[in-house]
Image 1 (cartoon, rainbow, N blue to C red):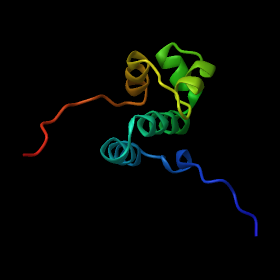
Image 2: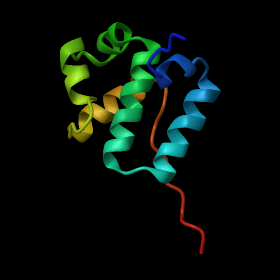
Image 3: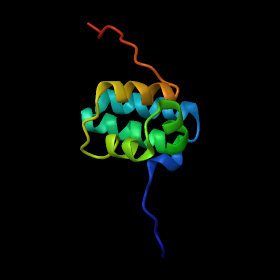
Length: 94
């Protein structure tokens, strides 16, 4: 039996899936999980498209969104905008 490596980017095929995935990671993950998740989302959309929209090179994107990377906040914001997202703050439940 032949198996293939699981790649979450293969399943992020709609805006709804992307939103659910990123919100779950934001709620349950740590900083590196969030950066990796944004990278998977960018990969699912297409790094060339994200590079064009952010003005960053593809190699820079891969490096900034790789496992263990610590990208600048400005880079994260550019990529979030390019993938169609934004950050919104809601009060924590009391």
